Image 1 (cartoon, helix red, strand yellow):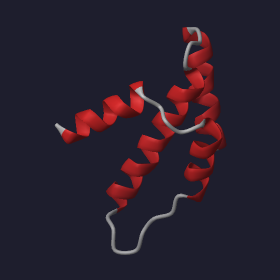
Image 2 (cartoon, rainbow, N blue to C red):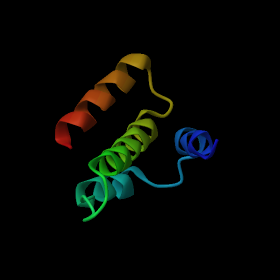
Image 3 (cartoon, one colour):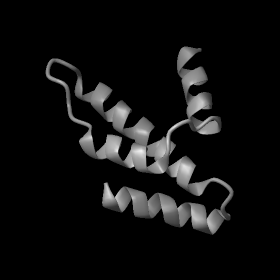
Image 4 (cartoon, rainbow, N blue to C red):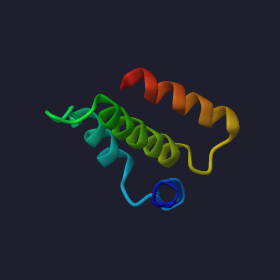
Length: 74
């Protein structure tokens, strides 16, 4: 339930700017003693949020292009 709430907030209520999210994604590091899966989940969540913020109010083709571009640069 909490995970679903977090996903909805991330998807529908973006509170962070694209620039902030890009910096956060670039600075993200694996924490010693934490599972790689946890790190991967944090990266994916931030990447998903960044893609959604960038793609807001855009056409489907623009949205796909934004997702591809962001994945290539990260």
